[in-house]
Image: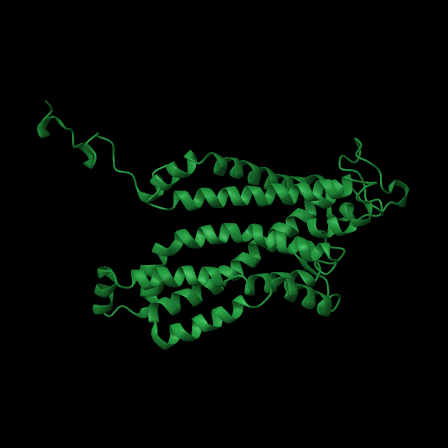
Length: 313
C-alpha cells in the first residue's frame, strides 16, 4: 500500500510533472476540440489564399475589363471563370476576400471597444451610471442594423470618395459599413462584461486594491479586465462571422461596398442575373463566404469551451 512518502512531489506535482498554467490547460482543451481544429485549418487556408494570391495577381488585373472573354466558364487561364465584363473571378475573390475580412475584423474591433467600455463602467460603478448605460444599451437593441445599413448605404453611396490605404483602393462606403456594424453590435458584449464586473468587483483582491488607494481606472483595466478576456475573445470571434455576413447582405442588395472595390458580397450581387446560366459567378464567392463563416464559428465554439475552466473535455 502506497504511503505519502512513496509519492514524488518534485516540481510541485504528485506525478513529478510541473504544474500547468491556465493558458496551457486552455490550449489542451482547444486541441481536443476537433471542429475547432478544422476551423483553424480552414481559416488559415483562406487567409493564405487572400494574401499569397495577392502576390500572384495585381489589383489592377482583378479590376481589368476584357470584353473579349466575358462570361467564360472556368479554364486553365481563368480557373474560376470570368464575369460579365471579362474580369478574372479568382483574382476578384482574392482582393474581395481581403476587404470582406478587413471589414469583419475592424467592425468587431469597434464593437469590442464600445461594448467592453460600456460594460466595464456600468458593472464597476453601478448605481445611476449603471442604470443610464443599461437603458442606453436596451435602446440600442431596438436599432435595426440591416435597416441602418440600407438607409445609410443609400444616402452616402457615392458621396464619400475612394481613398488609398496600404496601396489598395477603398470605396468610401467601407467606412460607413464598418461604423454601422461596429456601433450596432456591441450590446450583447456589454451585458456579458457588465455581469462579469459585477461579480468580480466583490472579490477580496479588488477590495484590497481599493483600500490601498489604487485608482479606479487601474482596477478596471489591470485587475478585472484580464479576468474577463475569455468572453470578450469568444464574442469577438463569433462577431467577425456576423460582420462578414452583414457586409455580404448589404453588398448583395447593391448598397454596400461600391466599385471598384470588390468584396465577396458585391460579387454575388453581380452574379444575380446569371444564377442559372453562369453558376461559377456566384459559386466561388458564395463558397468562400460559407467556408469562412463556418471556420470562424468552429473556432469560436472551440475557444468558448477551451476558455471555460469548468470544461473537462
